[in-house]
Image 1 (tube, rainbow, N blue to C red):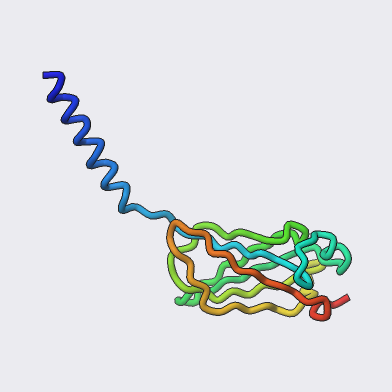
Image 2: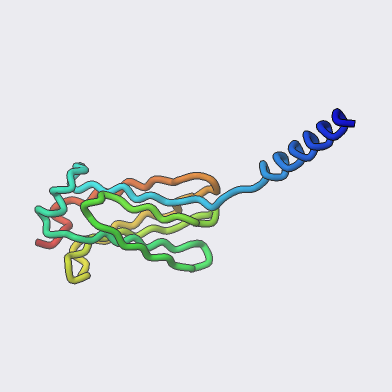
Length: 129
């Protein structure tokens, strides 16, 4: 009797594991920031830049905007559905005013259960003093 109960419990565990294997979690998008090819946070201070703004748009036109600190040299946006996104990234000064060129990256593919990295390099000449 005990052996059949163990087999029954084992079978239940196998079925539960199999059903979970089909589940997926949303993906994420990480923006990695450099200025003049350098990932030194001091570059943000040198250029009087405080903020990093990321705007992403999916294929249906839905938009998500996220803000971070320039000195963090990046930003991750979680809970994105699998699909293709257009990404815009720019730098801001303390009062929230854009102070850089807008960097555009089109057709960034995000997959479930994965983090997609986008490297963005701002050139000093594209940052307003």
